[in-house]
Structure formats: C-alpha cells, structure tokens
Length: 313
Ligand code: TXA
Ligand code: MG
Image 1 (cartoon, rainbow, N blue to C red):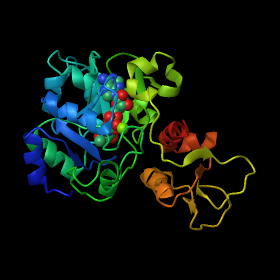
Image 2: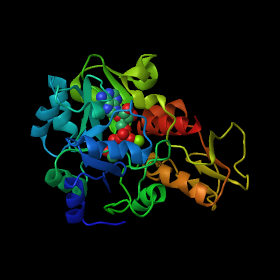
Image 3: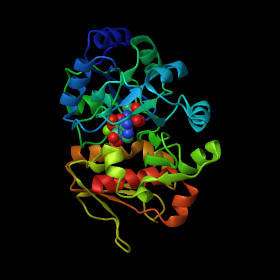
Image 4: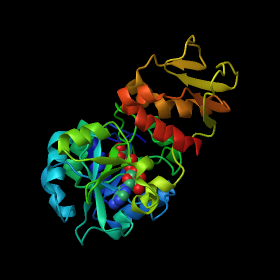
C-alpha cells in the first residue's frame, strides 16, 4: 500500500514497519529504539535472529549514539562517502539493542543519500532497515517488488526504481585490517585510497567470516528460476532461459539482454531481471561471466559476481 511520507512517519512512530526507497534498494524500516517494532521486521521477513540489522541515520552526530569508538579512518570514510552506499561496522555502545546486533559487540551504521530516505530518517529518528524482501529473495529495487513479497497491506513509500540496485558495501572498520563483508558500489580501491590502509575483501577473508558477518552465510538474492553462469562456447539460445550478457557477440532479443559493458546498468537492473524471469516462468537466468581484466577495470562487477554467486547458491 503506497503511503505518503507523513503517513509513514505516523506508522513508524506508532511502532510499526514501513518500506522506503534508498539509493541502493528498498529498506524495511522500523524505529531503532523500539524492540517490538524491530521484532515485527524479523517476523515479516522471516529473517533468522542471528543476522544483524543496519541502523540508518541522517546526521553525522547520531553516530555517537551507537558507536563506542570512532577511529580516524572511519571519520575519513564518513566524510568522503556519506551520505551514500557505504555501511560501516563500529564497536557498539552498550545501550544499542541486542536485537539489532544479534548480540555481537559491533553495530552497522549507514547514512543513505536518497532524499526521501533522508527526510524519513531525519524526522522519524534512526531506523533499522534490512532490504525489504522476504529472506532469501532478491532485494527490492521498486515499490512493486516490496508489494510482491509482502502483499498490499505493507505500507511503502514509492520512490520509483532505485539508482544503484545492489545493497551497500559493508565494511568492518572496528578492527584492522579493514574488511569488506559485502562488496558494493563503493569498492576496495575507493576505501584504500580514502583511508590509506589495506582492505581485505570477503572472498579473501577466510573462515571466521561467517561468524563475524552472519548475513554472509545465508543463501540470498535468488529468484525461483535457477541462476547459473554461461558456459564457455555455449550459445545463448534456450527458449526457457533469460540471458544477461555484456561482452558476447549476440543480438538483443526478448530473452537476451545485452548490457554492452555497461556494468553499472547491469547492477541497477539485476534484481528486477531475476524477478521478471519468474513472472515469465522461465527456468533459468544465465549470466555471462566476467573475466579478470573486466573485474580489475570495473570494480562494480565484484559486487555483481558476489550477488550472482549467492543466487547460484
Ligand atoms: O543497501 C543496504 O545496505 C540496504 C538498504 C535498505 O540500506 N540494506 C540492507 O540490509 O541490505 P540487510 O539487512 O539486507 O543486509 C545487512 C547486512 C547483512 O549481511 C548483515 O549480516 C550485515 O549487513 N551486518 C549488519 N550488522 C552487522 C554487524 N554488526 N557485523 C557484521 N555484519 C553486519
Ligand atoms: Mg538483505
């Protein structure tokens, strides 16, 4: 159900969740100081309680309400990247609800850049906001995706299609070395340039990863259709598949979308394409792999590979 920002503030203040747009994906927001409201978010999503939530804020000052320690490199990152698609993990203050952090000693904070999100958070107060999808489903990049997962009873502020289309970069700044738990629009090189420090990417981070960022161990982002990589030499011509390609020589057709090396556009559209494949009852989504040179030159492909690999399972 579409609601105005005024109505959304009323619902949040009454202790209930509202979905809203951010520059990355739609979030399912609830008052970060209200345990009952946060419980509703977990219940609605069917989210395991050991998967912590991001607190969304709309001013630098509010960091101090949640973070126990703000190292210099975090200050640099906040200056350079906030508001924007970067989530930072801090050592938490003791009064931050365990429900939010899954009883970890850290808390994830993000200041989104989307104007509607900023106004909502500024007026309703800090909001926890996981992506507004049922657990395991692709994140919503349109208000209609939210309604598809939760039905028309769930209030949602419609801000149109989101600009980035993949979730924020999640970076642990609470310890050195800095670690990216979830790659996103703001990439490893950006973070290294801004902080002057080395950054480890999830894939390199090793086994303790799953316990340090619980979200990374769950299967994610998947449509009903089977997602897989296009095999070498395979021609993209099956009838019941959707092909997403970027470099291959192939003609655009209804079941073959050619991104012509526009990887940012591919990121923006990926989850919508996953959902479209299901609407069209297709059996497979087949994605052209990215070679090493492309991954080096276009860091957003790191985030694409991460989400596609998780959808493959
Ligand atoms: O772009 C985004 O980040 C979106 C929009 C709505 O802001 N939100 C989002 O939230 O993607 P969610 O809950 O779907 O993903 C949050 C990720 C999860 O993988 C979670 O495990 C991780 O952040 N996370 C949250 N708090 C953490 C913490 N204290 N330590 C490690 N990982 C944490
Ligand atoms: Mg999510």
